[in-house]
Amino acid sequence: MNLSLFENASALRGLEQYQNIIANNIAASHVAGFKKVAVSFEAVEGGEIARSTHDRLRNEMPGSFPVMKNQVDYHEGEMRETHNPMDMALRGEGFFALLNSNGDAVYTRDGQFYVNSDGVMVNSMGHEFSDIGGSNIQTVPGGGDLSIDKEGLIYQSGQNIGQIGVFVFEDPLMDLQKVGGGFVAKEVGVTPETATPEQFTIMQGYIESSNVSPIEEMIGLIEVSRAHEANQKMIQTFDQNIGKAIGTLGQTH
Image 1: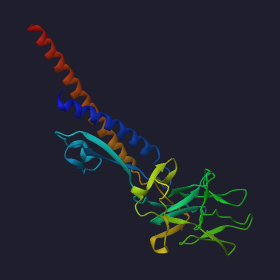
Image 2: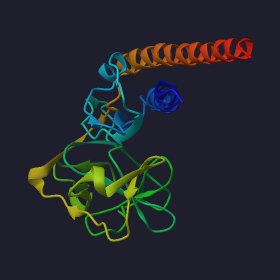
Image 3: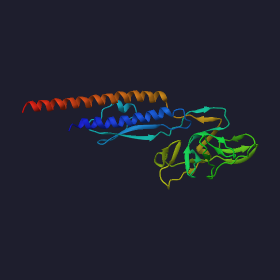
Image 4: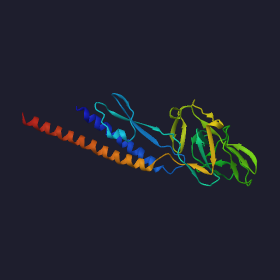
Protein backbone atom coordinates (compact mmCIF):
# COMPACT_ATOMS: atom_id res chain seq x y z
CA MET A 1 0.00 0.00 0.00
CA ASN A 2 1.31 3.45 -0.91
CA LEU A 3 2.60 5.35 2.12
CA SER A 4 1.30 8.65 0.76
CA LEU A 5 -2.28 7.35 0.87
CA PHE A 6 -2.03 6.90 4.61
CA GLU A 7 -0.45 10.33 4.94
CA ASN A 8 -3.24 12.00 2.97
CA ALA A 9 -6.01 10.15 4.79
CA SER A 10 -4.49 11.07 8.15
CA ALA A 11 -4.10 14.67 7.06
CA LEU A 12 -7.76 14.82 5.98
CA ARG A 13 -8.95 13.63 9.39
CA GLY A 14 -6.76 16.19 11.11
CA LEU A 15 -7.88 19.00 8.83
CA GLU A 16 -11.55 18.22 9.48
CA GLN A 17 -10.96 18.36 13.23
CA TYR A 18 -8.98 21.56 12.84
CA GLN A 19 -11.80 23.11 10.82
CA ASN A 20 -14.21 22.38 13.68
CA ILE A 21 -11.84 23.99 16.18
CA ILE A 22 -11.53 27.12 14.05
CA ALA A 23 -15.31 27.34 13.72
CA ASN A 24 -15.69 27.11 17.50
CA ASN A 25 -13.01 29.77 18.05
CA ILE A 26 -14.80 32.14 15.68
CA ALA A 27 -18.22 31.45 17.21
CA ALA A 28 -16.91 32.26 20.71
CA SER A 29 -14.74 35.23 19.73
CA HIS A 30 -17.24 37.65 21.31
CA VAL A 31 -17.34 35.83 24.68
CA ALA A 32 -15.57 37.66 27.50
CA GLY A 33 -12.53 35.79 28.80
CA PHE A 34 -12.75 33.06 26.16
CA LYS A 35 -9.46 31.27 25.44
CA LYS A 36 -8.99 29.93 21.95
CA VAL A 37 -7.78 26.45 21.13
CA ALA A 38 -4.51 26.41 19.18
CA VAL A 39 -3.53 23.53 16.92
CA SER A 40 -0.20 21.85 16.23
CA PHE A 41 0.71 18.64 14.45
CA GLU A 42 2.83 15.75 15.61
CA ALA A 43 4.43 13.29 13.21
CA VAL A 44 4.48 9.60 14.02
CA GLU A 45 8.03 9.53 12.65
CA GLY A 46 10.34 12.40 13.43
CA GLY A 47 8.70 13.66 16.60
CA GLU A 48 6.69 16.76 17.15
CA ILE A 49 6.56 19.28 14.36
CA ALA A 50 6.93 22.64 16.05
CA ARG A 51 5.17 24.88 13.57
CA SER A 52 2.64 27.61 13.87
CA THR A 53 -0.96 26.87 13.03
CA HIS A 54 -0.65 28.42 9.58
CA ASP A 55 2.95 27.66 8.61
CA ARG A 56 2.52 23.94 9.02
CA LEU A 57 -0.06 23.89 6.22
CA ARG A 58 2.52 25.19 3.76
CA ASN A 59 5.07 22.48 4.49
CA GLU A 60 5.34 18.85 3.53
CA MET A 61 5.86 16.04 6.02
CA PRO A 62 7.53 13.27 3.98
CA GLY A 63 7.64 9.85 5.59
CA SER A 64 5.45 10.85 8.51
CA PHE A 65 1.82 10.62 9.53
CA PRO A 66 0.50 13.96 10.81
CA VAL A 67 -1.47 13.66 14.04
CA MET A 68 -3.28 16.76 15.24
CA LYS A 69 -2.73 18.03 18.77
CA ASN A 70 -4.61 20.92 20.30
CA GLN A 71 -4.28 22.89 23.49
CA VAL A 72 -5.79 25.96 25.05
CA ASP A 73 -3.98 29.24 24.46
CA TYR A 74 -4.04 31.02 27.84
CA HIS A 75 -2.58 34.28 26.59
CA GLU A 76 -4.37 37.31 27.99
CA GLY A 77 -7.01 39.02 25.86
CA GLU A 78 -7.41 42.77 25.41
CA MET A 79 -8.86 44.75 28.33
CA ARG A 80 -11.98 46.57 27.16
CA GLU A 81 -13.56 49.35 29.20
CA THR A 82 -17.33 49.03 29.64
CA HIS A 83 -17.99 51.55 32.44
CA ASN A 84 -20.26 48.88 33.95
CA PRO A 85 -19.51 48.47 37.69
CA MET A 86 -20.66 44.85 37.41
CA ASP A 87 -17.82 43.97 35.05
CA MET A 88 -14.42 42.81 36.27
CA ALA A 89 -11.33 42.09 34.22
CA LEU A 90 -8.44 40.05 35.55
CA ARG A 91 -5.04 41.29 34.44
CA GLY A 92 -2.15 38.95 35.09
CA GLU A 93 -2.30 35.40 36.35
CA GLY A 94 -5.17 33.36 37.71
CA PHE A 95 -8.86 32.67 37.33
CA PHE A 96 -12.11 33.56 39.01
CA ALA A 97 -13.89 30.56 40.49
CA LEU A 98 -17.58 29.78 40.02
CA LEU A 99 -19.47 27.33 42.22
CA ASN A 100 -21.73 25.13 40.10
CA SER A 101 -24.84 23.27 41.26
CA ASN A 102 -22.70 20.31 42.38
CA GLY A 103 -20.53 22.50 44.55
CA ASP A 104 -17.56 21.98 42.24
CA ALA A 105 -15.43 24.89 41.08
CA VAL A 106 -15.37 26.03 37.48
CA TYR A 107 -12.59 28.46 36.65
CA THR A 108 -13.04 31.36 34.27
CA ARG A 109 -11.57 34.67 33.12
CA ASP A 110 -15.05 36.11 32.50
CA GLY A 111 -15.71 38.59 35.29
CA GLN A 112 -19.18 39.76 34.28
CA PHE A 113 -21.39 39.42 37.35
CA TYR A 114 -24.87 40.14 38.65
CA VAL A 115 -26.48 40.18 42.08
CA ASN A 116 -29.38 37.73 42.36
CA SER A 117 -32.54 38.12 44.41
CA ASP A 118 -30.76 36.69 47.46
CA GLY A 119 -28.00 39.28 47.20
CA VAL A 120 -25.40 36.75 46.02
CA MET A 121 -22.87 37.56 43.28
CA VAL A 122 -23.48 35.26 40.30
CA ASN A 123 -22.62 35.04 36.60
CA SER A 124 -25.10 35.04 33.71
CA MET A 125 -25.75 31.31 34.23
CA GLY A 126 -26.59 31.80 37.90
CA HIS A 127 -23.36 30.22 39.16
CA GLU A 128 -22.04 31.86 42.31
CA PHE A 129 -18.68 33.59 42.39
CA SER A 130 -16.32 32.24 45.01
CA ASP A 131 -14.53 34.31 47.60
CA ILE A 132 -10.95 33.53 48.63
CA GLY A 133 -12.20 30.90 51.07
CA GLY A 134 -14.39 29.00 48.60
CA SER A 135 -17.73 30.38 49.79
CA ASN A 136 -20.22 32.49 47.89
CA ILE A 137 -20.19 36.28 48.14
CA GLN A 138 -23.17 37.76 49.96
CA THR A 139 -23.99 41.41 49.42
CA VAL A 140 -26.48 43.51 51.36
CA PRO A 141 -29.74 43.74 49.35
CA GLY A 142 -30.48 47.41 48.75
CA GLY A 143 -27.22 48.34 50.44
CA GLY A 144 -25.87 50.39 47.56
CA ASP A 145 -23.46 49.92 44.68
CA LEU A 146 -20.46 47.64 44.89
CA SER A 147 -16.89 48.87 44.61
CA ILE A 148 -14.08 46.40 43.92
CA ASP A 149 -10.43 47.35 44.33
CA LYS A 150 -7.45 45.97 42.43
CA GLU A 151 -6.93 43.18 44.97
CA GLY A 152 -10.56 42.08 44.76
CA LEU A 153 -11.75 43.56 48.04
CA ILE A 154 -15.48 44.31 47.77
CA TYR A 155 -16.98 47.38 49.39
CA GLN A 156 -20.62 48.34 49.77
CA SER A 157 -21.49 51.71 51.27
CA GLY A 158 -17.88 51.98 52.39
CA GLN A 159 -17.91 48.66 54.26
CA ASN A 160 -15.79 45.67 53.24
CA ILE A 161 -18.13 42.73 52.66
CA GLY A 162 -15.74 40.19 51.15
CA GLN A 163 -13.02 39.52 48.62
CA ILE A 164 -13.22 38.02 45.15
CA GLY A 165 -11.28 34.78 44.94
CA VAL A 166 -8.50 34.62 42.37
CA PHE A 167 -6.79 31.26 41.99
CA VAL A 168 -3.66 30.11 40.18
CA PHE A 169 -2.56 26.71 38.93
CA GLU A 170 1.03 25.56 38.65
CA ASP A 171 0.54 24.58 35.01
CA PRO A 172 -2.89 25.35 33.51
CA LEU A 173 -2.09 23.30 30.38
CA MET A 174 -1.53 20.20 32.48
CA ASP A 175 -3.95 20.91 35.33
CA LEU A 176 -7.09 22.17 33.57
CA GLN A 177 -9.46 20.96 30.90
CA LYS A 178 -11.93 23.03 28.93
CA VAL A 179 -15.65 22.56 29.65
CA GLY A 180 -18.52 24.70 28.44
CA GLY A 181 -18.03 28.15 29.86
CA GLY A 182 -14.76 27.61 31.67
CA PHE A 183 -12.21 25.14 32.96
CA VAL A 184 -12.18 22.39 35.57
CA ALA A 185 -9.37 20.46 37.18
CA LYS A 186 -8.38 17.39 35.14
CA GLU A 187 -7.93 15.25 38.24
CA VAL A 188 -9.49 15.20 41.70
CA GLY A 189 -6.17 15.88 43.43
CA VAL A 190 -5.43 19.02 41.41
CA THR A 191 -6.13 22.11 43.51
CA PRO A 192 -5.16 25.73 42.87
CA GLU A 193 -3.42 28.17 45.15
CA THR A 194 -4.90 31.50 46.17
CA ALA A 195 -3.21 34.15 44.05
CA THR A 196 -1.07 36.77 45.75
CA PRO A 197 -1.67 40.49 45.07
CA GLU A 198 1.57 40.60 43.04
CA GLN A 199 0.17 38.09 40.55
CA PHE A 200 -2.94 39.93 39.40
CA THR A 201 -4.89 43.17 39.21
CA ILE A 202 -8.68 43.34 39.12
CA MET A 203 -10.06 46.14 36.97
CA GLN A 204 -13.65 47.08 37.73
CA GLY A 205 -15.58 48.48 34.78
CA TYR A 206 -13.58 46.41 32.29
CA ILE A 207 -13.88 42.99 30.72
CA GLU A 208 -11.18 40.84 29.19
CA SER A 209 -12.00 40.21 25.54
CA SER A 210 -11.41 36.78 24.07
CA ASN A 211 -7.91 36.17 22.72
CA VAL A 212 -9.33 35.10 19.35
CA SER A 213 -8.37 37.09 16.26
CA PRO A 214 -11.29 36.50 13.85
CA ILE A 215 -9.12 37.59 10.90
CA GLU A 216 -6.39 35.07 11.74
CA GLU A 217 -8.98 32.34 12.22
CA MET A 218 -10.59 33.14 8.85
CA ILE A 219 -7.17 32.94 7.18
CA GLY A 220 -6.67 29.59 8.87
CA LEU A 221 -10.06 28.42 7.63
CA ILE A 222 -9.14 29.31 4.04
CA GLU A 223 -5.82 27.48 4.31
CA VAL A 224 -7.50 24.43 5.81
CA SER A 225 -9.97 24.40 2.93
CA ARG A 226 -7.14 24.56 0.38
CA ALA A 227 -5.14 21.85 2.14
CA HIS A 228 -8.24 19.66 2.38
CA GLU A 229 -8.89 20.06 -1.34
CA ALA A 230 -5.26 19.26 -2.20
CA ASN A 231 -5.30 16.08 -0.11
CA GLN A 232 -8.58 14.97 -1.65
CA LYS A 233 -7.15 15.43 -5.16
CA MET A 234 -4.09 13.38 -4.25
CA ILE A 235 -6.26 10.55 -2.94
CA GLN A 236 -8.40 10.69 -6.10
CA THR A 237 -5.27 10.59 -8.26
CA PHE A 238 -3.99 7.57 -6.34
CA ASP A 239 -7.34 5.84 -6.74
CA GLN A 240 -7.34 6.52 -10.49
CA ASN A 241 -3.78 5.18 -10.83
CA ILE A 242 -4.73 2.01 -8.96
CA GLY A 243 -7.69 1.58 -11.28
CA LYS A 244 -5.48 1.99 -14.35
CA ALA A 245 -2.92 -0.45 -12.96
CA ILE A 246 -5.60 -3.07 -12.30
CA GLY A 247 -6.99 -2.55 -15.80
CA THR A 248 -3.54 -2.91 -17.37
CA LEU A 249 -2.82 -6.00 -15.29
CA GLY A 250 -6.09 -7.56 -16.42
CA GLN A 251 -5.26 -7.01 -20.08
CA THR A 252 -1.96 -8.89 -19.77
CA HIS A 253 -3.71 -12.15 -18.77
